[in-house]
Image (cartoon, rainbow, N blue to C red; front, side, top):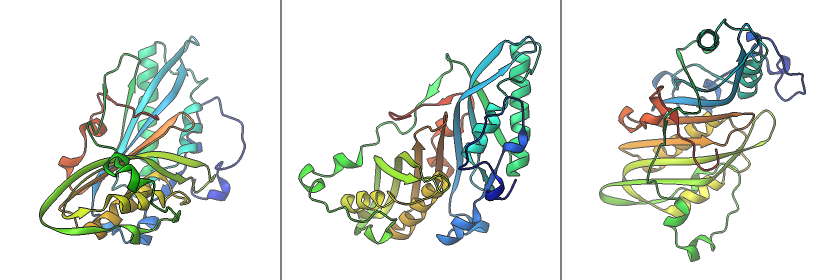
Length: 295
């Protein structure tokens, strides 16, 4: 499916109860990347998109429900990304589907089906793992200080926030004599779904090494400026990455967003100048990506 008008996006509809791969819908990445001067043929980053789906259920041939949590990963270099509502509808289409004579047989069949369907849809390799409630979790970005706490309260409360559409001109920094490394996070990122206009709440995580000293108030003002932007999560992450590259000329940069789940799914894109900057919690398919506070 390639036409938004012919899709189920933003429309009321009955949830399917039997397996239907035609529900899946893909979004091409190139249009937004071109708009923000990201060269698709020579990407300035490496990265992955990690999805957690918490409502995976299907049946054995005897009608016994099987429930799992799914971690899905595919590369940021892929031409397409999957649209979240279409993925939810697709995953729900397994709910009443008999998939095997035993629980394990059903798990393996559904896992292979999802890998095959999504890899074909996105024209890239998709990794999928299923987890139960005793699965190990690996939290990411331990010890990243909150951006709000890096700004004195008197300064924070005196800032006039009046840009609510993405405004890169807000970013400011002072040159430094030697490389400066900063890590920080923020729970103030909000953008909106470009299909439904519903708000999307995300936590941002950044690690940057640059010959600049960042002005924290300007960084916060820039993040707030996404409040009326309509973009997919992956696009927001790449926009922030690109703006930081242009403003701070970093030697190393990592930008990740971990969005609050909607419809039983959360989306967690990460982009970095170097593979070594990507937290293993994102890439290790043997562990669940640990949830942040709002997930």
